[in-house]
Image 1: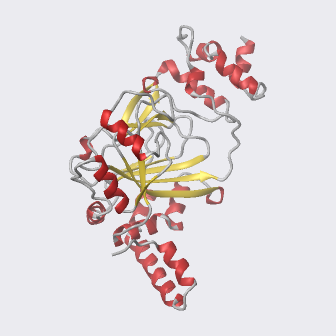
Image 2: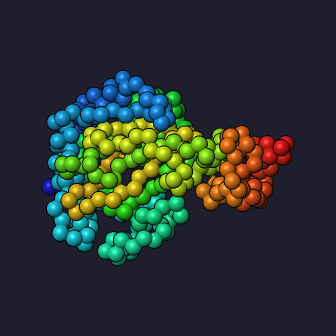
Image 3: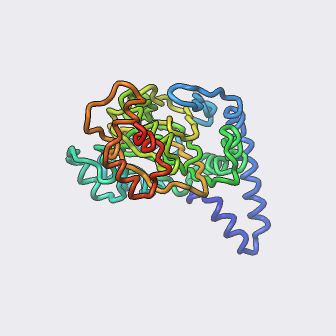
Length: 354
């Protein structure tokens, strides 16, 4: 069976003499998908919010047992028992995956293969808060009918609407992006709350191998340690400046999404710290997720200080108020001056009154 791509199918149908028949078939398939996975929207509507470490939903046993078995046994998902990294990439490409430009990752397969043979302890090329050398691949077309139906459902207006409604996001203000992704060994994103342009994110664990919950490749949800709460206070007081990644030791892990067939959903804010550091055998099976986002069409941010701008050169004060007043480094203040943000910088205003 060749790859199933409903968007291409509809596009081709409109250009052919058999358009009415094929469009009818596509619409019928879409209706089947909405019916078979409709219970997922009800689970999201009914779910209670959790407050620790920040406001979010976590729904375990998200898919029915039958659906989850079919999803994880699909050939484009259940990729295992590979003999080498080269063989893994060959199998992933044959199964419809493509290397994507993704935060914390590189896109050069050969560079990744070279690093993975040595696993040398070098800083990440993309962000100095990481030590990984990750690579992420996204499925570009489905082979199995169940995966095609699933992606059709996840792309539906019905599913996007329930996500937006649950988190009070206006669909007219956002656009949607989602897919099935595999993250190979070495993938790392240090703690971060997500940039302000992101309105909502969800992650579903669909790991296709036994014992995945015990592996070291899951998403951690964190809070700032007391000594670094001033960074969150800065983000709170400066909505025109974007949020950044920070080193792991600035935060403490409060929970980890280890459960297979679980979904976590949240709307990013200054509290929503999360991160991943994957260290596992990807030849036996890969960290696999349904990953989706709602993105705002517009962003009003004018700059983005990096974590180095928040490093303290003096002894940290004991109280948050004192830290906010006295501990912002000169590099961060100079950055704001350069951006012409003196009047919008709440922390700088407080410093001037000290």
